[in-house]
Image (tube, rainbow, N blue to C red):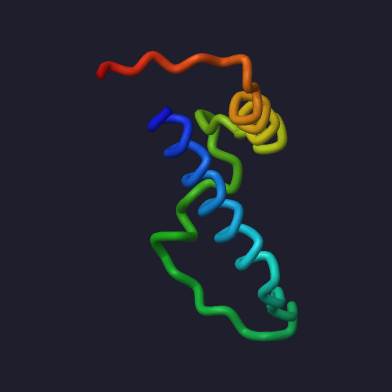
Length: 78
């Protein structure tokens, strides 16, 4: 029971943070503004070869399915 409450509290907190952040206006930098070149950053590749892209839609859906699957049981020690 404690684990289920902890999961629900964590998910509510994360949704609150995400929704609060999503309500902030997005600021775009126009292409006409000058950008400072950073030599260390210029040497980095735009597409690293060993990077694993995360499918956040799938990850979120699995988390929601786990969270709201009420047939799951939790073993607690009294």
